[in-house]
Image (tube, rainbow, N blue to C red; front, side, top):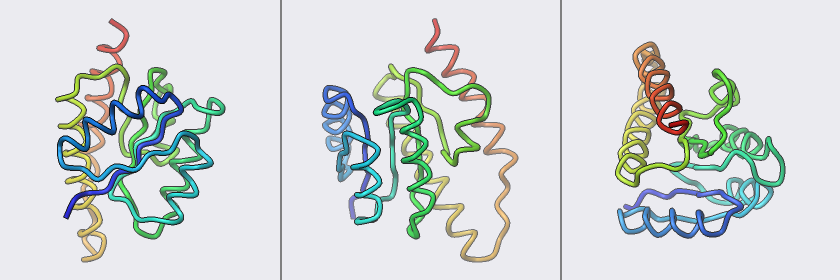
Length: 155
């Protein structure tokens, strides 16, 4: 079964390029060009992952998409894709699992998506089994990766 991803970005070139890359690597990808369209699709269809741009109709549109994904019963993994990373841990507080900073190497993007999907599914299975997941290592890893990605983006 192909894993379904909802890809949200208001820049058509980025949307179509990422869609093509993800489909070439075996994902079933739907797209949305606005937070409004994304929220409608999140309510209508289940996805394994939602990847949303941060700034679309407004500077906080991506957070609206993240919140809609967090409210979905099927609990998708959520990543924010942006050239303008939020300061500190604001993106985590909004409910995103990961911050992906544009521009990004395609191989790095695919590795991060795969890792996030595996980690998220593991968390969901542990939650169903009543096991408390150990977020300490994952948070430390994300913080380290975030710092590395932010440094790479600014150089």
